[in-house]
Length: 420
Image 1: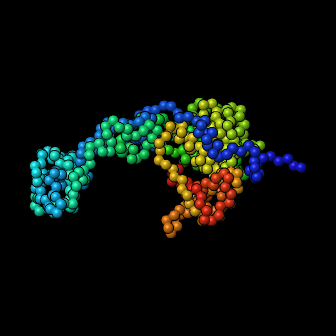
Image 2: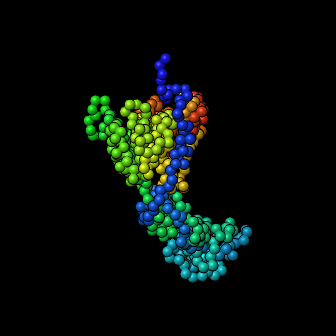
Image 3: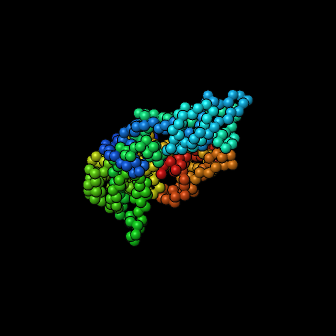
């Protein structure tokens, strides 16, 4: 009888690590990088806040009007079933307040954001008054304190405005500007080295030789890593020679925090990444129960975390987003970031699935007539069909123990909008 090796077609393949276990092991193995510096706020979007931002002032800095209207004293409001007439004695604008103090029966024409005049605590919207010359008439449908924003209503002086570990968003930048903060302390950039491996791989612009293919993986990774908090070192295309791989990885390990390669982690005669990792570093695992993406290595070389991604283009992106990116963001010290949502959607078609591995299919999200989310696949789901990723707008994530999916079943989807 022919003795075969374990492979991805086996009903139960030995040596595979559960997807959830792989992710947990990766996250437990990496730690946040050190080092921080200050940046002008206009350059800080997409960086990790190194320490908390404390409000140096109240926001708003002064009690002000929330609408265009008329400021008056609440004790002068008319009682039930009556009306009140007020004389306009001045005007207040944002940046140009009314300096006087009101007497009974007086009001001030006030604009949105203008400081409240002394003694005033209520604003009547301009649409809710009847004006005649320099006086207004109002009814009894008003309450004390309406349409007024109190000083410190948004933030009190000394209050934490943004926590450490915050992935800074455009509103965060605006918030800091509203506090008069010109610079922010941010963690340094994460240094990530990337490489493609394989003698059959050719760069764009070259003419592939016999059996050669263009290198899409490195460009996919360059695009995923094109973000303000990452510095990329492009090692290019490395030939399938153990000594060359070792030289390249050892040469960058002292500078890079992370090394990511694609290709060369299967069991073929020319797949030398695993050998290089075992020779010069440490390997944690190299097969994950996920489709696509089963042949994925994780370990370390020198001081750098090492991810050996599969060679198939779709598998590279799936393993990057589901296994590598969470680790990178932990290393960046991100503990507070906008949520990448996971949704439930009804499958519009049957989906074949074998129990015993997590499967990640490429899907297109739609809304039905009732507004509920539905999803269909992009068609053929081969791990080399990169167009399936380009057509998709979400991952369909089918858990380890599930089997075939029927049309109408609920499935978990992760929209790409939360990933990039």
